[in-house]
Image (cartoon, rainbow, N blue to C red; front, side, top):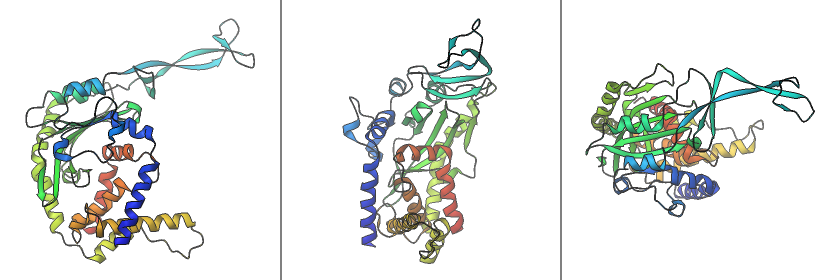
Length: 366
């Protein structure tokens, strides 16, 4: 297993080096990370790409910094025009082939763009309403912060099309020796149609810097508002969700302890592995060698994590260890594209990571 872990480390270095400097630079300036005295630096932290101002804060992130550094622009509506054929008498211009054209307004459509650079987010019907980041993620939540809970992270993704903030308690919660969590309220919305405005209770496992909402999955501890003219912030629902940031501490501690005490045999672990990553028949000539290699590498990497990685191996033989093996692989090793960091954030915001975690626990029956 030492060989597998060595291979895993090599793969990590190789994959991190394939990520473009531009991607790292964007995320090291457009994602703010607070409470680093408790959680440490983010796994994608690169000091040389911080610019004139670090994106890491020892304590809470001042709301003024979020407004100044991230939310200093708005999403604005622009009319949408369609180019159609015209006559010389009523044309707006001439095509390269000499035929005249004019522009007409698309009556039931509008474009949503960034006010600072005119970047186009998406085209919507006129019923779409933008939820401005400063109002929905700062002002509304800012009214609820106090000494016990404050902004712990904030960020822009998809060229500003998606934004998020979190409200966190200052201190980590120790569940097991070497295993700490950070319960928080995650708030997100978008200007590109990817996400409704959502507030939900989640927790970050500090040992692997992965975010989970498994403790709250069944209780429906979240608030959503669609981007429509009728949608409004139900402040009572948001306050109830905020209250769960304090209560989720007990829920997540209880759930992690349950997982750590749920014994898992080697056969149980292999059952999960074979269900989620079925082994490919190496003699099957209808399957390409590339697919066979990727399948083998993924299986070996997950096994290596489970047996040898310090983010996982201390809890080997329990449901917690199996969960850690699969979610750590997905967060830090899975996939071959160069946009791993943004993808991880989007998977968390859209519930993709939560669904994958639930699948692992479902197979284990816990």
